[in-house]
Picture (cartoon, rainbow, N blue to C red):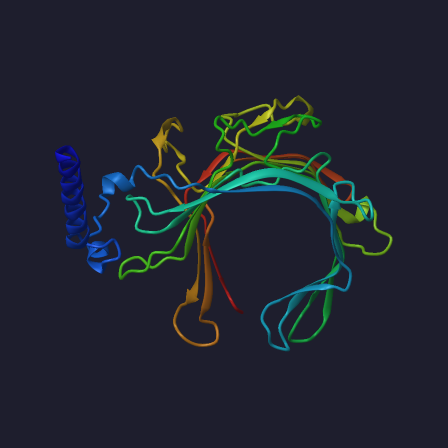
Amino acid sequence: MKKTMKKYNFVKVITFISILILFSAQSVYDPSVHARMNKIEDESLDDIDAAALDLDMILTVRSVVTSGLSFKQNETATASSINIGYMEIGNANLVAGSSFQTNTSMAWDIGNPASLTQTWLRGGNVFFPVIDPGMGVNMTNVFLVRGSTASTLPIGNVTIKGIVNGQNIVGGTPNLDPFVGSSFTSPWVIISSLNNATDKQGLKFYGEQTGYINEIALNWRVAGANNATAVIARGLYIYGMMNETSGFSTPTTWPKRQGMMKMGGSYPTYNVTTGSPTGASGTVFTDIEVGTSGAGKYSSKVFVNLPFSGSIRIKDVNFGTANWGPFCIDDASFYINKVYMREL
């Protein structure tokens, strides 16, 4: 009996202590608990790696404009414009009703690194590789309308065949290899504008790109067109720095084109006297700014800085029946390439 009483008294004591703790402790719903949340230190935040947005783009594409496309200088009734009577985007061979395919996986991420005061948007695999034979564009009856007189100036027909962007070309001579050394291919970084008293700039970005176009043709005769009335460029390559200084006159002997053209980023620097490499530049950006300068009707302006580092080659250029041979810009670095545009 005594043992039973002892056990009963022990249970009462434990129950009383438990109730006392429950009512004397703060409730989890007490607002003061939320007010005591601890700040995460910057060192801990640096260890957090948020997932990027991945986009798989596996598409079959065809686009047609049948009722005319117009690009106007502005919205006034007397504005000049460039007009396209018919446009179709499809297969590289420009077969009516054809389509082209894309197959790429892009990755996008957003952040604010300590080295920059702006917010940046970073993309990987930002290209649209198209399965052979590529993409084509056909534009017919392209003409200019002069706003002041409403007169029409014919431009002609434009065709672009075999556009391949960001992938290996193995069927052409020579081949094209982007020669990307990491899985983060074709990186692009887009940076928001600064907005302070000393540095007010628009959109900035830099990135890398490589591509090939089998043929670009402008025929200035809409009816009865033939090669004698056309400007044609065949075999256009856009690629990286290959350190070539010779061997450009015979396209059939060109070695494989390699690398990616940089549109902004860090460029190689050279001795202005000897031409020998001396290192690399700081990061340069492609800038786009829209604003005003002064006052009045012509104050609106667009500023573009288009630096690039890379190479461009064309196998064959024809003006009518005259063949001008190959065209080459090898290992060029434009650190500053400013263009100003304003309304006239």
